[in-house]
Length: 399
Image (tube, rainbow, N blue to C red; front, side, top):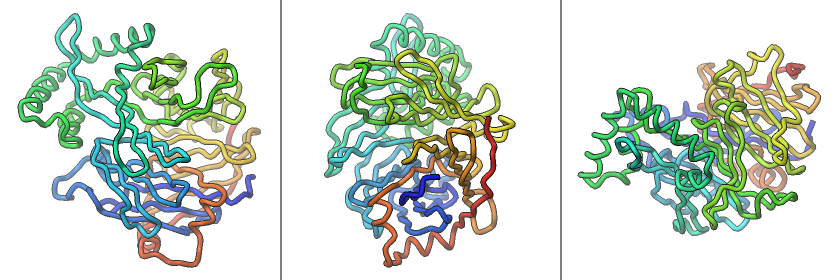
């Protein structure tokens, strides 16, 4: 088991309307927390779950917390929860903070796609780049990037044709034109909610959920600064060259099912959490991107003992173990390459209910140690009043 200073950061959805992000140690103690109700939708508006709380949180090298207010804003909070900066953008799901403080974050905006048939309304996902002062510098459409690849373009066209035949797509067209007439296409969560809440969500074609800025691949598959993304609805992960507007590498259709959190490993392979929506169990895969072969996988025994249809993820820890976010079950577990589960924690409300989260992020080294000093912030005390975490017995659960 990794015994370095490793903590785990997450934000339980149950803490809305004043969301909390918790940093826990290996003994499941909340050692630090952040909290702010800035930009949260009012409870009387009855917002759906995907608009409540913080979608995802990350800890920067300077100890600041980056928090996504779904489809509304990105916040940077000091360790005492004081806002450092705020940028109003329709952010969602994931962000990546570079060592220099530049932020790459997923954003979303309605878009009309013209084609051979009638127009199609798309909730286009994008990558927005924000500098260390909170100023947006560039935005890159994922639809434009992905359709630059001939095969991916054909895949996306087939999805568009299927969704265009939905009986609910005419309502999406009408909603789009109403928003355009009112000048409200950029209204963030208000515009997206109108389209996302249609039955079958016909416009949510891509549903990007992960972003990671990469170093250069040793075999030349991609270059430094290219970006790894995951599109849940396409069962596809891809590496994109933002400067050239090109797809450098992609994989997934026919193998993945609703995946989350692809990440680059030190050996230049990719790790990905395959949610397994089609087959009823989740697994963790290690992929050799050179020849597209699966070289290692983790499944529970029986496989259904690990099933997280939505959200979740997996990432490497120092020493080679993997931490898995079984997010919908309010659980995280650390597994070895041999299949042993050496650490497990569940997150609970004070009433004993499982507290779901989007993903647990490992925080290692000095960043973890800096958050565990003697100072007791009000947000930390509030988090301990709202939540508790409990360790489960380690077991051998994989095959």
